[in-house]
Length: 280
Image (cartoon, rainbow, N blue to C red):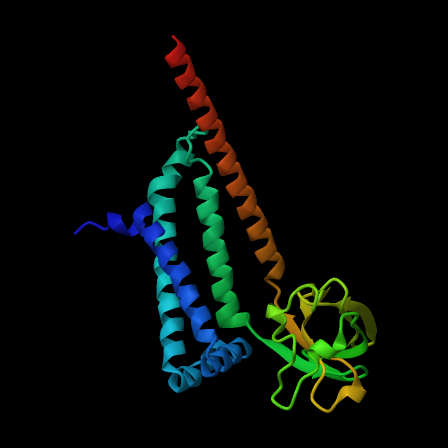
């Protein structure tokens, strides 16, 4: 039995389409309250503690297992395709081949898969807290204190009722008029032994200190706590691989752009040849 199908482009295309649809299914699952709570809890737990969540919500467990299987097959497909189809192009130094940039793209994609796997199994973990101004929490060796909240949008839109809901809804569904990330931030004071560091963080813009990434995930005003002002949900992530992630994604984007340039130049040359042949 031949295994050529395992490193074929057709399989890669089918897997990519299937994974896209699988993520869409995951988004649909997250719209249901029980599944949404379990998916949030998985983000707070190490992989070794995921089993209990899978038992309580089988649909989420099946989705996670299916995603892992699809990603594993895609990784195998990418590795075999790189070794069997693209490595010979580099070994023979066929620099004008249209596939010359496909090998770096494949290898960088594999590195991203590996980094995500290492992070998920060995490193993944973070601390979260909900703070009012002046409150603090501990994350690893750091003592983190919220010193100031700079919220300039309409506070009434994030005031929660007795059910924990606000007029603006979840932060990911707010319009820029309701919540502008550029105008709202939180200022922190971080103690690392005798050293003190200060900086600000906002939604999708973390404050970085060595391998610590401090991010604001939400602003809100709790029910019947208006006198305390806006409170901030904070996520502290410790991940020494973050810089490698950024480097891989940057190089991957550059490789994709170069590959697009190669195909564009070939199509232009081919079009020029066709025009000369028609006028001859």
